Image (tube, rainbow, N blue to C red; front, side, top):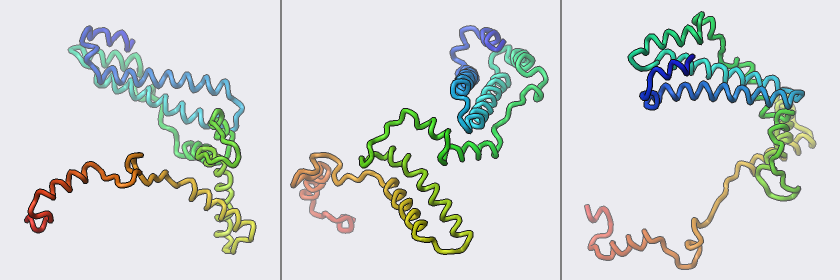
Length: 228
């Protein structure tokens, strides 16, 4: 019905970018929803996949619903008000009662966040196909994956120590120190002493500095305060 109403615009349709954008959002959300359900059907049985799928579907359903509603509210053209009414009757015949989709609840969002940020079968699923470097080889992605369970366990130990108001034993202290060392190593960024290979050559001076020196050499006053 929505597509048929769009054809009432004739050649003007390709210039209605806002309308086409909203319909593209709706169609894209529907397509991704089918893809999500297909993935769930293929991988069902993974602990936590139900929560992740529900969160994704709620967001996509709400996105498609809002996109269609926005398109009906802003239908262009001389017949815009009439087309808008017809579109609403077709898509939302009972008004708000036929727009039941809402964003995921905070509790569901927190559950999904927990599954993604702690060791879980969901994380294992997303890690499939990611290159893992051999032990002893520096590789940031591999180090990040291997560090997660250690850091999570160290956080649990640190929380327990704070609650019990005691000092850590040797094993706990070693675990916390190892986690801190891993964090410090992982947050480091690449540092380059020289931006280019040319700058590494002895006696190299940037062209801009050479030009500045040549310009100052032709001036009587080379300090800003003197020039002022």
